[in-house]
Length: 205
Image (cartoon, rainbow, N blue to C red; front, side):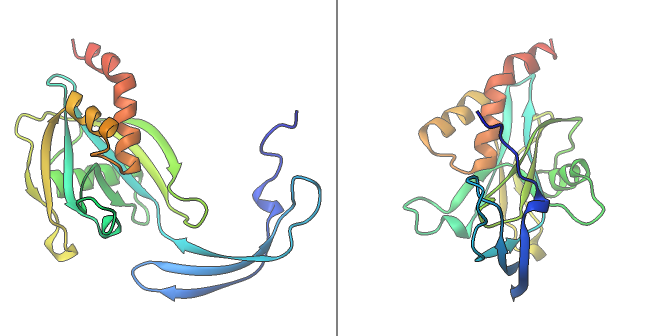
């Protein structure tokens, strides 16, 4: 049985690359080729690539109260899906040049939910849509107290309008099972919490 990962980035040959759109985000068109698994070379083909920087997402969790904070806000990409385009999501933000994901987590925690994380547990890094986007998500669970959490937040000059909800962990996990939460970062983080919840709560006892 052949082992995976026999090819490397250096095996991809980009014949040509040009920027076809530059706005809030960027779109490049690439002409490329790479080896095939059967030993032949792939004929040169084209792909459009959405150039989007990395982002950091955090699930705020109070292990004493067994509650999470979820953010409700409008998302254009959810229009036309037969559901409300106001989604329940995690604290999240784009990584700026020179910032670590942990610094982004703390900045966005303050801006989007008025929260400071006493500890950040790394969940994973994952590529959002590697077939056509460069974006990588750095995903964390952030330890907080929900005692005074909740309310309205967001940077008005960035057209953010955010309501922070305090939700029992059981209810939040139920929301991923019944489809009320259907965005990847929140699903992954809440499933991680479901697997690690007992350990996190024991650590507080």
